[in-house]
Length: 207
Image 1 (spheres, rainbow, N blue to C red):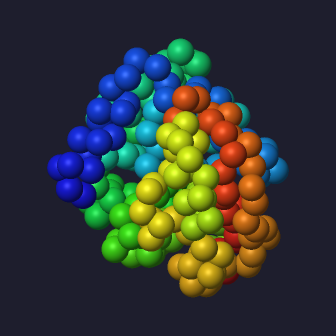
Image 2 (cartoon, rainbow, N blue to C red):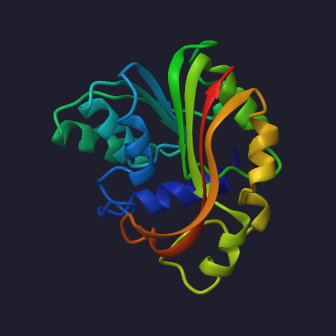
């Protein structure tokens, strides 16, 4: 990942405020609460709100991001909540995980550069065991009309970094689809995720 991309996230997470809040993503929480605890991976986990929630509910948590500032805040949040998370700062192509290591992979607003996002999904897919669950929420391509109106709701300005249902079906073709929908929702996840936005929600079971 480029130095500029890494610096962008370090600058954002160096703010003492949790820019996406300290509470878990609502969709992640709803889906995770249906599953028995096991081993879970959080890619692009940022400030750690989702990883900490999973650890509090009995999951063995691994997470990674390119931002060391995100890791610092995540570890502080974990300590505040009395839990342990295994949080790695590393590029996705050099991760320490093994094939089929996890019961769940949770991609929550993990927007990667357009040229690599499908390849990155393939790497992450390899870490999920057969029968494991993928939980995904991110901004849809239609979100571009919402984030053009202001910064508070967040999301990439490059429409090619946003997602379509067709892309997810292609990237995760070896899944039983449990839920796959595009929805307009109200976000209330800290100062950088606040307002109306268009998201895709996907839960699938790996065949």
